[in-house]
Image (tube, rainbow, N blue to C red; front, side, top):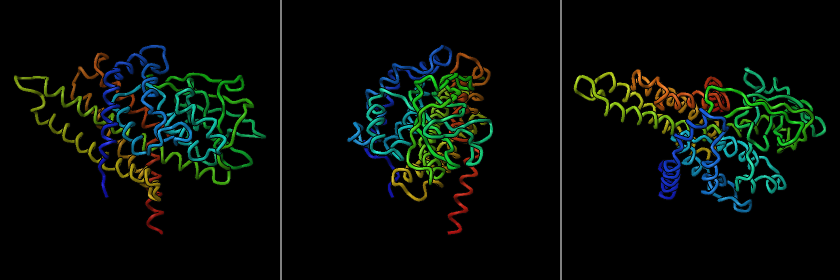
Length: 370
């Protein structure tokens, strides 16, 4: 089994990294965080021009027809640069939901526009501070009309439509809802990471389209979340490695008592621990990428493993990066805290680490009983 990316995938990674560096994505993240914008449109347009929003969309729907391995490569670079765009909401979640469950007519309607970046999609699932379950979702659909409220919807204030979890006749389903109408009220919400916007969305009889069926709605939802978990894990992996490299560069250039602080044992230990946690996360992310790209039955286990491992790596590296910078790391002038904010925000998207640990235990128990 080959766990290395192909030469073409490495070239894609280098191209995306070069574009993000040229566009100063990290600087743009700070501008969005400190300003009034919800995301950086110039950077978003560059991602669209490179065709990255069309990565996994089939050619018949104006996509590139590439696989999820290529999307993993892109996700890692977006995480490394803290790109302030709605890419994860629109591509990992909305596009993947349509690819997974959409009818031919729905794919023809949405996918070409998503590929061209003409519309932005998102995923609306949470309704309270309690984790969503099959029994506590209160958003309902009757005769195609949806009513309810979702909170902390990523990029909800800039999206054209949302994939919404709701209950119809006692069964969970995923519904596409146009957000550009007076029956969908959108209110921006403050979060720990203002470089990624979130919103509260209330539906008052808005039109909705069912994706797939409600017969396997909860299973379809978990399949979508498993696929997205691998992609989010790669974004977290990119951020973790960026933090580790920041800490290394700073410790090599910062002198105390006539020698680089990197030569002190305490700093060496921090850097060594960061390296180990990044490499462990990388191995688990590669496992997730393999399961995702081959549609393996091991995807639930691989997704939970990569998600938990990458969350821990990002937390460890973003925290220790601040510590390595000493008092300077806490100041607004340094970028360390930007990564820490993004780390905490990504760890909460599509479920907390505790939820994914439970998913991992459950999937391992199921595998052991077969």
